[in-house]
Image (cartoon, rainbow, N blue to C red; front, side, top):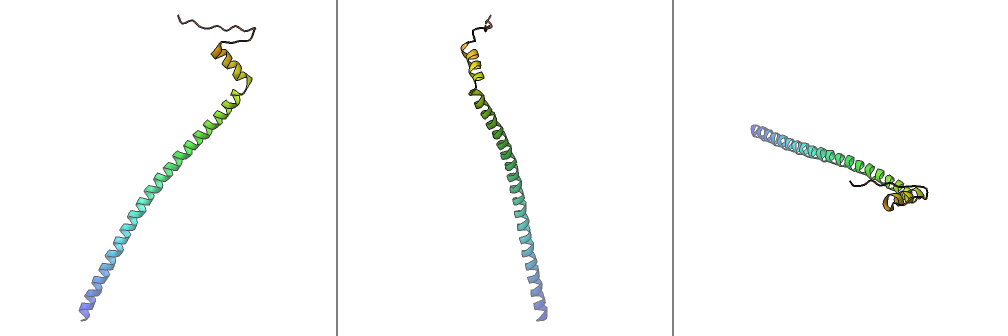
Length: 98
């Protein structure tokens, strides 16, 4: 009977070893997937930070443009370019289409 017990324990040890190996493989697969997700999330964060910087710069440009549009210089520039108006002592020459 001792030989049978020895064989049974040997089989139990092999079964436990196989189960442990399968668990290790499964854990390694999950770690690999998580690293891939982490990498893709890091790329998304970089992309979004770049977009945020671009939009922040655009917002500051729009604020500057808004401030310029409320000045007298803007009104004069629009009057000259769109309406062809000028001060009394100014002459505006336009190119002919020839």
